[in-house]
Length: 364
Image (cartoon, rainbow, N blue to C red; front, side):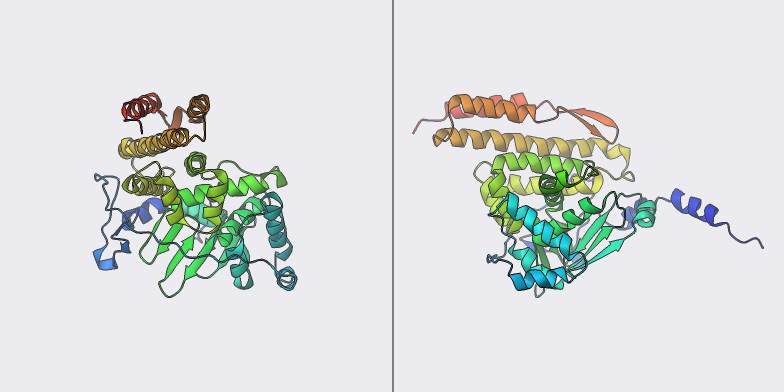
């Protein structure tokens, strides 16, 4: 009997679409009713093949974050740990660029944080993925890539997760930036990953020429347009304080709560499927529909927020026009989705409709 050739085995493994197999077994996303995750025997599996009209989360609570600083003794303890110098450099760089940044959650997590290097080559090959880091919010363990070209980007990205995470052991819920990890599922992961990568590039992209701007492309874009609505300073504050509830309250100035939560669900679904080669091309129109719904929400919310500022005397009519034009310019009219070109052309119609509503509204 001939011994198996290792090259033949490896080639065979590469041909198997493990991700497609996993997706056959596992639902794309779990959802919640009345603010409570469904128990395992009650979980409904929603997939893009069906008309996706999920029940909305009616309540998303955020923990109270008490501000604290890092003592010299704590800094000395950090330096004794692996990657201690990198961690302190992370802290110093953020506070140098944003002295008001609340890093209390980072300081709480640092004493028990473990960071390990990992070779992602094999797992990426098997899952046909491009992972280069991960953070376990329950165990407080971060793993970053051994790839020297991607180490800095991976390391800083995961530390931002550490800096915005609180784990409630009693309830078994992880609050992480704008994301919630419940016992039976996740909400807010799309916006959270996008904004985490925005923060990574904002604070550390100049540290290395090896940064890859190709991670979380759509998530970053949606999160950046969301930040233009909320404001950079406020958005960063809410992120570090893992205040998803606060983000929703900010957006309720220009959108309904149901629309906000539908937006979060859309971005979550897109995170799961938009890069997933195993999702059938027959469902491409449903993916594009979710992209369009997401862009419609952002456009309508931004324009409404600008009119609100105008009514409060915070901006002039000329600034209103300039701001809306600038927001439109920042939207890529053409999007490449799974190799298909999609043209977004709803901006003018939404802008006209909202302008008419404002002018028809009775003056106070």
